[in-house]
Image (tube, rainbow, N blue to C red; front, side, top):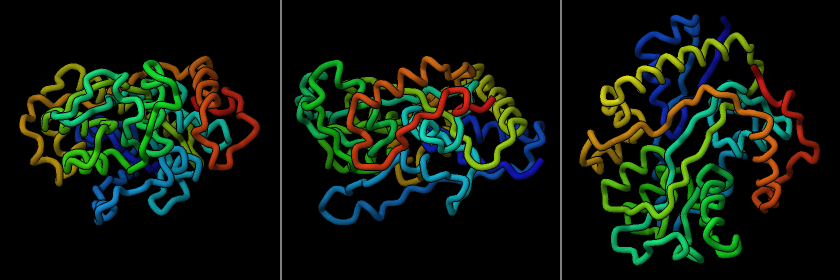
Length: 301
């Protein structure tokens, strides 16, 4: 097989590492699989002001990751970002699996906020046009008018984690492994807003490659389901940057940040998600395609 480059899920790459460690990818003939790892960049945290994020998951998805400096054929972003990207003709989505990622809105231990309604007007730190942004709005609009939702674009999950631990945020969307770190350091979850992530396929991807990749991933997920305790050290190693591992006080209390669900991302899901996004102003400041790619053309598999 030709090279098939994969960027492990930035919020929980556990299943990728298990599949690689146990030789599942090699069993499928994916000997040229190339992982692009993620590092924590603290450079945006210098100075007294909060960082201001100008782009996010959707922007990365729509830019064709197969042509980036760290070119990859398969990426995972929140399903809203993938949905919008493929609907505009930017890549295709794997039709037969998605992931379910832990997420929540947290406040510091000494915050007076105890109920969702008390978040009205409070700045909630999220990543722009990313899963934390969409999930925060979707969950908070159940409790208040959209105009009362105050999202604050400060950056990726580990940037938000660093700022929260430093006492700089009134409320924050925790996503993936940072949720466990926040909880072990006294933060309280006000709203649980777990969500789906989609698999975006970019560039010249053969269906055979994708099928092989997901077969290997399914074996890894089954291993996790059978004995999750065996993989908590791996969660710490691969899902928590070294800078924050000292804030993990109890490895046994860690969970599995993301579960891969081997079910179809259906046409009903595709269209319902589009309708919800169209009812908000998430994309008012970017150019997006006026014509929406039909479901059958936007999916692979």
